[in-house]
Image (cartoon, rainbow, N blue to C red; front, side):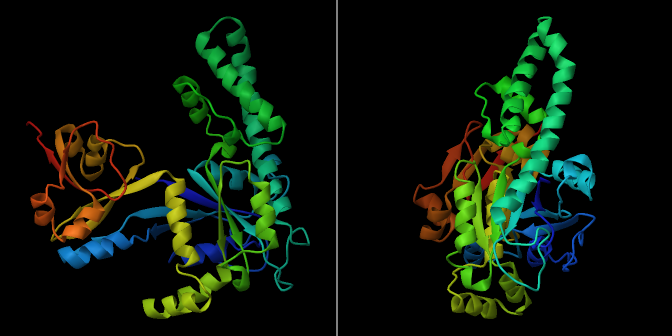
Length: 368
């Protein structure tokens, strides 16, 4: 399942430094605008402690975690919606992603220039929001001009499309993002989805702070928190420079000791990867055996046959049932056989909605 989160932000806010920490694919990080021109793509392993704990019981040949794709996109400048700077490339790259990680500079450092001269993360956020909103408004107005006459002539599909477009037009003209509009009926939701608006993508705001603010944030973080309180968005505090220092340490023990010294239980990178996975509306079910313990990625809300199809299309076509063990039960009883003997393994049919962390076996039959 190839879904991508795009890292966006103004130049010099720490996007590439953060990307370097996330991925072994090294993006250049330097103190000048447009350092990143072509988007860098990293396939990132999703941290999942459950896999390691299951492996201690099962002793598999290998552990296979889930992954998520992160894209480092060139820094945006004012006027991008009109093609200024690398605007067209920037906006095109965002359009290809499924969710946005918006990095905001929430630290002071005289050695790292800010394109607007001073530190103001709310202004920076609004600058990018404005460019994305203007591009979406351009898209909406172009579509309205094509369907308006058809809608007036009584075309029901065109009328429905027109209503969706004008709802978006209203909020965009008020300098609000498309994601603030919610449609109740499925047809409107389908039309809205097919527009692929930039400001309709789910967003995670990452406040890049100095190391002293990594645990509790600072005044800039609070300004961002206040600015996004009415948005359907998450906020995460990360010290990218500190994370880069952690990434240089060779052993897990050294990294954990470093985290303890600065008062953190988990690295910002791990928290960010997990948040990105959630942002994409993804979860994992697990298969556990002697060959491997593996996390399989699926969209939240999928039913058992769809998840079976993640392993192989034949599993979905010939789906009979799913044998499901809850992770907590597996850990409590210590083996699959013990779980079965305790009556804790459930047999589920086609309507079962798979839950994150379910340990599953699929039974299927495909006729030749």
